[in-house]
Image (tube, rainbow, N blue to C red; front, side):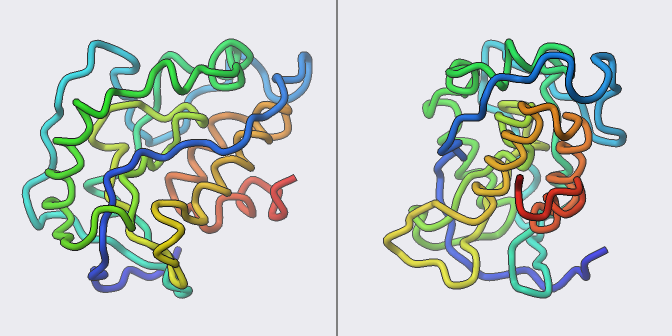
Length: 213
């Protein structure tokens, strides 16, 4: 387990995480059993619905952590992650591994903008909103819940972040690699969800694919 360190003072952004690559369709007959259980210990969100602005944790009640390398991790109490109940091991080909699915379930900015501002207060962040990401801890492409406040947090920039990069960060690359692995039948959905929710920096190693392939 990585040590918890003091809260970082960083800038924030109000952009949702977006996959930059698409994975191949799920390989039929490959991978874990269709009825694999959901990730243990991770809350189950409401899933896609008629989204409304969700209440956020009290201002200043959440604290970002960091790994020894300085990469940001969310407060495990405020942001443990939450999964989308509509995404299961047996329907990957028709949900997260289908082109356009995540776009179809993403809440509108008219909903998330207010949530982002409130969540920034929850985590006690100030600064330029263009340089950090309002992030789904378990990304939509990994079956994360679209609008459960337990699955969203203000993710500060990683060490070495450049202003020109905007909200792009190393976690996005990990999410894309895990997405490719689950859609190729190489990693069970629940295992990928648990790994990214626990520590995104170690997630690929945790699922046995440290190089992302």
